[in-house]
Image 1 (cartoon, rainbow, N blue to C red):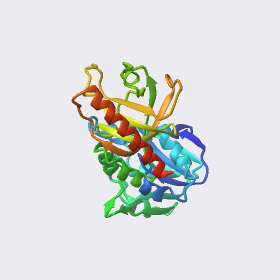
Image 2: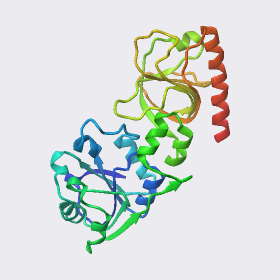
Image 3: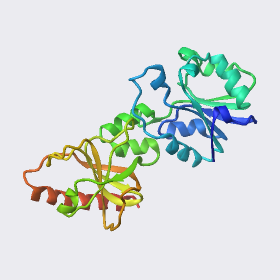
Image 4: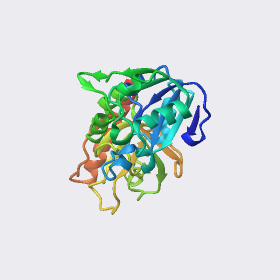
Length: 291
């Protein structure tokens, strides 16, 4: 699948799905279905329209493109969203982008999609344009809750990764390069691969989770390690169960399956080690139950 900047796009007849698509969740899939091209924005429009109020993201652009490719889309076209683009009128978006640059023959959006200066464009404006067919996907509900990126962010931040995974249609993932830590886990008998969380992206609430790390069963702590004075900030510490190898400098993809417990201080190092053993057993049981 191709990733193309709008400025470099080749004009051809397209079936275009338009949206930010952060997380590429189940609702987004309804919008994308039947499209050969996805038109999205980078950075997130809120970071330009209302700086300082942008949400932490669920997916980097590269991960978003991977997930979209899995849906059979041929090309992701990326609009470099800046102040100039934010000033474009809704009609200019139709004329210059959808028709002029992309030659859209079908345009698909979610029912809450807004576009153009001051968000004056909406699905009704798209429907009124006879140059292309318009598909408006209704908001998807699961268990009476609307599936949205903002709702999923809240679930992940609160540690409710199991429910977030249901709405995403796959496990929530946070990726990063493995860095050297203080070797505390190795001293305790649980050597960990340590990842510094990416700024600007959603991180699950502090606690211990059953995960897959690069596809391998893992018990993962997210937090600040209250038992020890390390001087470090938040860290993702992944103990890959029955793994023996060097991960330093490699990218670790951590897929969160279930929150096992909150992060807390223990009365002794021995009590912590006992709990870590139970965490590993619970992580194995969780992963085994999903395979």
